[in-house]
Picture 1: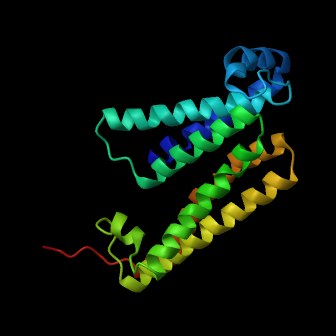
Picture 2: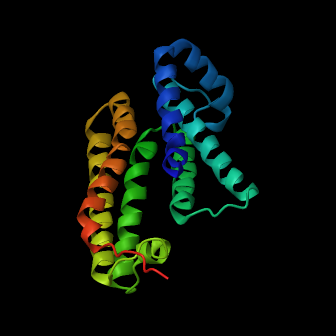
Length: 207
């Protein structure tokens, strides 16, 4: 359920972009009516309308997610806060400057920030953030937690590099499709790591 909640902005971004791309005249008019006053140029081109509308929806949904969790007094984890901050800042720059470069590299920034955070925590602060976060739910020896941390560092670093490559070498439409489908790598990664770490997981002690 949490995975679906986290992917909701991505899903709406993908759907809204594709719908706007399919109806360029309508999306162009809507983008100018809603967003022109928030751009540096004062008007929006047909080519930029789909990505600006999709970016706006992603920002609004991210704000609503934070508000929902806050009002429900639910814990807002650090990953959601980082994603929220990056999408609002880089999304805002995309809209204001009408330059999709910022929204394209957003994912790379997020992935590499997490990779750096886990790396610094493990090797400089001597603190395994994964163990701190979910250690109460999963019982494993310290060397297994270190392996898990290294797997996540590798995953974030690789996904960030892949997004950057696609962002710089493919069209806007191709990047949007990649952005959506790349998120399915996460459940595959989670399943793969469970097989790797299964031998380390300790059975709960009986009372």
